[in-house]
Image (tube, rainbow, N blue to C red; front, side):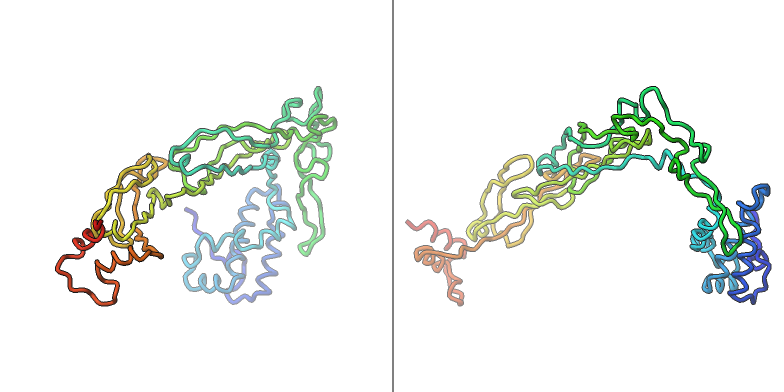
Length: 369
């Protein structure tokens, strides 16, 4: 592995150099070694990168302090990257970068689309296969996506010679520099249409409604997103097709609340059912089932039905159903009902001395003819 040279040595300055002198030295060296000004020197790009990296560190007071104390070990790769320093954009405007041409075909990529799919809670539980109707731009069949009229084709741009970019000279603080910009004639594509397709007006795509089949796995959660590669909009004049993102929205259940793979059911019971116990019918994802509420159930007490929750989308393993007891106290009682409760005791603010236990007196009061 090559050993990095000392940054002060790279720029040819003393360790006590000031900020103004450092900047002047860097500008002089950057202009001298910039690759666009040295097309015949293969090592110019490496030298320019080395100069830029050194200046990125030494021009930052904190990074320079760490470098002076610990050398290259005091600044990481993220610190020394010239692009991270933020001066790279300025050089792009002066010199046009390193002459890299953007991928015109990639820039013509079709847009990604989003479709919100609303499901019932039970549909999310079971999963389904559904066809959705998606309005989108599709490939023009008349020109097969080329954008050119039948019998013709796109021609090489005469302005840039098919390169998609042109060089312009401009005067700057560095002197006369070369700036690389997209070709104004072809928009950077390198080709132009002289006879556009009449159906798509040279775009290579037209708007249609297409059916797309979507498989939703059992146990899908609200907000889950699925990507259907290549089901988005067609690219401009044969560019790559975008993707379709299907976002699932699950309606709430009337009696169940989802928490991960588990579902929660709040079961309302009266004070007699809580005290004596009862067998009740409760809703589950598999249909109604009989549930035995034990004697002495307390408010907020939880019971678990194993394997009655939602399935995992990947493994299919189901969670549980949790039953939360909620004792409902009646708000209005008639005199007969009040009298029955008084016989049980505990409504006067003072406990009664009962010869029988609470449950026995409650049963007797309920069974009075």
